[in-house]
Length: 108
Length: 114
Image (cartoon, rainbow over all chains, first blue to last red):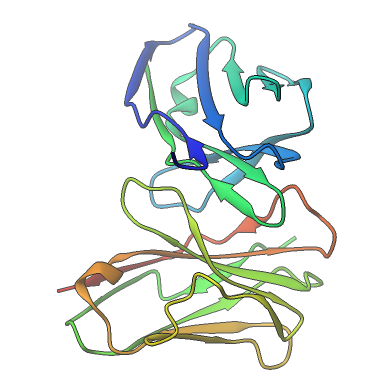
């Protein structure tokens, strides 16, 4: 079992819909949980991070961590075409481990 | 604040040739990372520097890859000789010491080995 599992997609949703992106993990030592957004031919950019379990909201984005289930989620409300990108989950104990990324397409 | 600078943006070489990539981190960022991102995969850490010392190079294929950060600022990553499976985007990232939750990435160098 890989340390971090993420469905690669692609995921296509209409503009304005709520998007749900998820990752599962196996290493219970992970403490920091992050979501990165990567546009085509660009490096990843940090979108959100959370420490341990709980929710964190930033504008249209909400990150959730459930350590008991080893499951993290990113929700995007009122999705826009500019949200079309690859979303990478990442987790950290002594180094950051990335998921494969989910390609998201928001259809106008 | 200027971002992480990388060059070149693209490189095409034949297998068994050598290639070098350059990275200039954000000013003041003591920690520098090189990642390899193969198409359809997440980034994989190759090497981490703090100032000019290596913190982690456990996933660096040392028979062909080398990296240095001589003055604790910019860094070079070299591959010699290159293999077809080295085709990937090589990303450099930097962070402040103790910023455990995220780095700033450059745009990467896209390497194609033919």
